[in-house]
Image 1 (tube, rainbow, N blue to C red):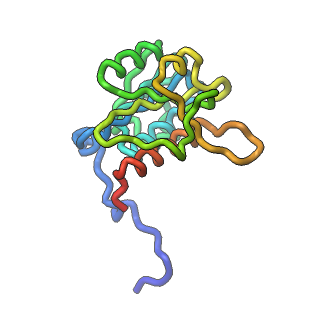
Image 2: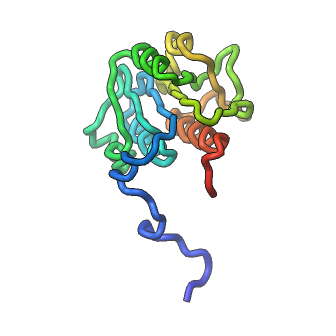
Length: 183
């Protein structure tokens, strides 16, 4: 007899296998990590990417790549389900994705950034979200090459969030606003 609010067991969650993930329809969302220095933040990015069914993670510049014990520690195996690619140049990835029809969005505070509150993803559109270095953010070159910048509203005294937190917020909002949330 159950009492209270019992936590579900992992087997009860009905999650797909890594193979099912890779074979499932694409979401139209990719993320670009622009010179993320912490392998733990990269692992967290993979974990959030898996959670929100991101199609691919692009690791650019100084980003560590799998296999990596530090990435795996935060990713908990998500680096095996989410596709990824390394490039030494964020700009070359942006160029290729633009040719493939992606809208390129820097997640950054700029003089013309759009508040996440106002962002409305369009059905059938493809989006590439760029997340930047823990200290310097998205590079100016990548911001310049983007279609626009998206800013997460913040109300306290700090002017930034950890990149792994920003990734989770943006992916959740994009997923939710695109009407893909079935809960």
